[in-house]
Amino acid sequence: MKKAPYYNEEIDDKAIFGSILIIAAGIGLIFGALLPWAHFITDGQGWRYGFDGAGRYTALIALPLIISGVYRFKSSESAGGIVAIILGSLASAIGISRLIEPRLIVGHYASLKLGFGLYLTVFAGLTGLIGGVFTILGKLK
Image (tube, rainbow, N blue to C red; front, side, top):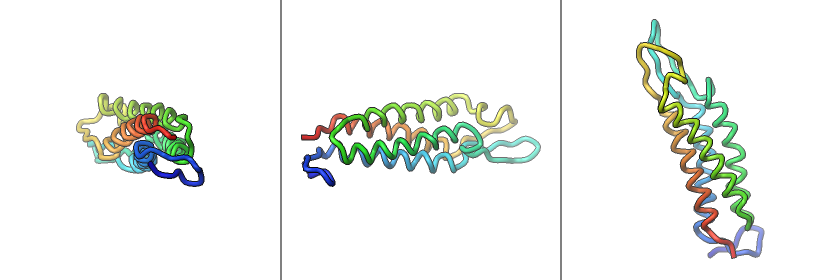
């Protein structure tokens, strides 16, 4: 148990760990949207980045996710953890839907390879979800 910053409450190590995971997940979602999601080959070659499509939405999810991690780190309420679970699930669902059907990213091309940004997006979304669970399990006393 440690003292929460700016508060007289004690915070559980699970809540601290969960808050750190949530903040890291938000940062990962931003980087995932900036990195390539797919490489395609037709007449020429090209990359599709996260911001070219659904990555815009995952980047928008990142800011409230980071805020919920900071909020949960400084507060005794579990609302930040619940928000992180919802947003992490949503970001993961967007990334997994693109992993299952990669043609949604670039359409129909002769050759298609998935990029690192898509995998990072799915991993960051799952990390946010897990961080939310840890913050709810971590009790403040």
